[in-house]
Length: 192
Image (cartoon, rainbow, N blue to C red):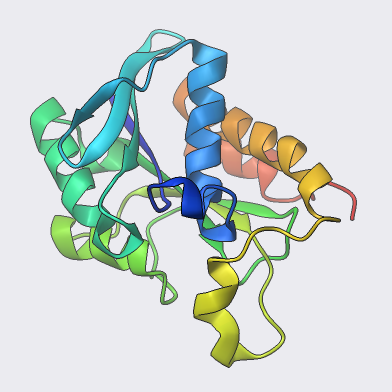
């Protein structure tokens, strides 16, 4: 059983922000796989389905980004999923828009959602799908930047990025993380 979590903040106010790209990927996977995200328990909005022959739970924590680990821990415990089968899709300031990196383990680079998950699980040995959102010119603007909507010229690129990220998650489940890394880590998702 794979637990696939997209990070973001709940509510319409945050829907189109950079921080919510993880939610957008989960919504795209739900659409493609015909999984209804109808359950509202464990501090998350989630649904159950399959990718190939593997069972998957798609989830979006509803605790706000900084407390994402609470929902992830509850879902992992309830479904008795292994931390090695946890896939977290999230925004990444250290990558430019249109770049994606897949990896297992590592630090959280100051990402509060990842930090919360690591704290609650006592481990960082889960799979991450890191989606570049670029970074502000001034580091002091980081908090405001991640909560801003994408710029008008960036918006047309998002469907291709979100689709590629959903495909990468599918590749991890159908093949393995190494295969997905080889396929997606080397190329740009969109031409900027």
